Length: 398
Image (tube, rainbow, N blue to C red; front, top):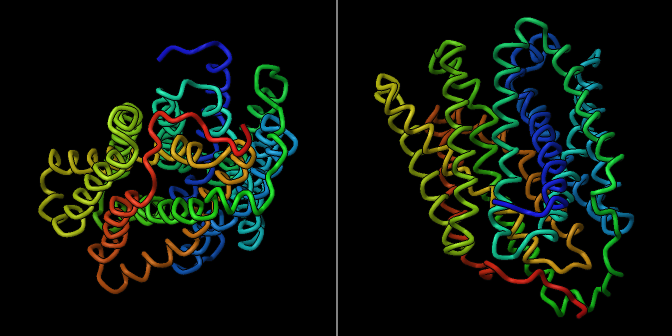
């Protein structure tokens, strides 16, 4: 996948930002036990703690996207990186549970803003016929970030402690300083915003609602599964640390492959068919884990294939960057992308709590049935949206 040097630089900075953005977001899933012990959190308190950053990411996405359209994408990309790095520092130094919650809220604000800015810059710079590939390649920072978090949480945190891990994670701010010094990243404001009446007649509101609900279903599938999967493997299945890490890394390798393949599939066959097929694969893997995990746990090869399939199916998140960029016009692209994706992620505030209640009621099958239903909803709802493969990015004004 060759590209002009300027596109390569945009991709590199956006990839680094998104990788460590997502690393900061999911790291708590691998640190929740020692954090809960030291800060005296109940099971319900832990569930809400996992969700608070997802909740504030919605606000971060709206504010940062709007500012990026007005003052420039590079400037806001830097600020979002600094914000989520500061949140990790606050968490690492937090003397109380409430201070830790405040740090997680700050992490969410930064994470929410970074995604849309990076994807928007890249989508505007690449060839339309390969936009899906570039979007998926950028989203691949997600499984890379999770893999780094798994290694840090399972292997490094037991040695140095969770506080040192979180303080060290704040060093990602150095990426922001490098991006600020780069003259190769675009920093122009968007064209003058259109009137509300123009946006309504262009159908932006309807597309926003349709895309937001797709995000709720797909991101809900991911977060209701992965926020508690490390704890499930360790405590429910009684897996050793090494094997738990191996299963998590297997899913992330599958997701990385799935994302990269998704870009080519969606560019060739369309956004909607690609989302539908990947969501069906996710649902199949979740059904096997939910209703056959006991016999599966005695068959390591089959368990490995199931986790790999779960990861590959999760790769359809790699299509959101291209899809949302193709749905919204230049005048409000960063604002609309940030609001759509991050309000969908903010809806996941209740995801850990819903899963906790489902597990309490029906055990593992109940817990995994939540993402199973959401995966099926994703594959069905995507057909409501228009097919946007290969189109020129829309503008309200010629």
